[in-house]
Image (cartoon, rainbow, N blue to C red; front, side):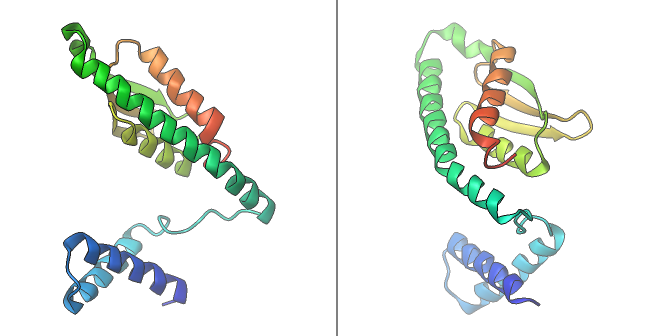
Length: 165
């Protein structure tokens, strides 16, 4: 076992201990065994993409912009959900499922987009269809699916693509 694998497994084990709220050594061992199992089942999950140094720094410089845009998106989504919940009753009937094309996103880009969709209040990822290359999401306000698709693509093109293509 490499030192990197050990450190990752230990970090996951400590996270497990934090989640169960116990500092008992048995929980540390159990968390470590579970972490090794997760790392074995999902080998790509902990590996960063292999990038040249210049590209790595370029993406790192764009990360604060992505984080800020994500904070703004979540805040706007909160207010949008409040308008739906406390607004006129006909707004409550607009919920639905929308298929967002994956487009040119890499597998990691799809993962991040999925996380962004689920992080923003009012939308949640339902399914990734790799054959059709679409992300199915549920939205509280799906009255204009084209607008939702455009918003997701806009966020990807303007903020996410520079960091997580």
